[in-house]
Length: 121
Image (cartoon, rainbow, N blue to C red; front, side, top):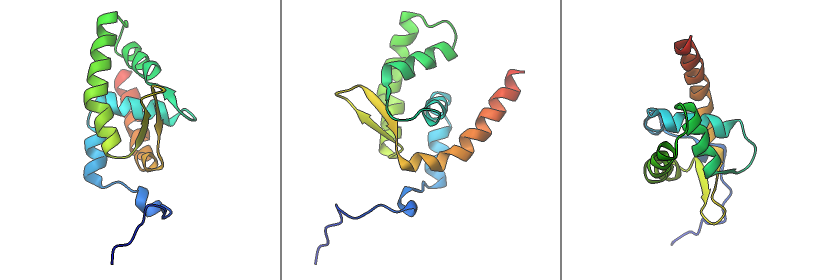
């Protein structure tokens, strides 16, 4: 007998990420920064705004840098974050938003930001 679970409620256990997924998501600097940035926002953020923040973080945001980051983020990083179900992407509105599973990343993001700050000194 096949059971339909499409209307089943998700539990906190459903939102936990495996350690391999956590490390894969956080091993790349742009994904780490994007996740950290989104963790400090409530609700959806325009993908344009997120990419602009990435460009500013990397230095002076030239049109070429923004174009490169847009392509890289859209085709590489965004897809990994969507596949891991830590982000929701609304293509029509052009926005991204954290999902409940992203909370599993918060302790690691906090450690990474402390490390990034100590490296900057």
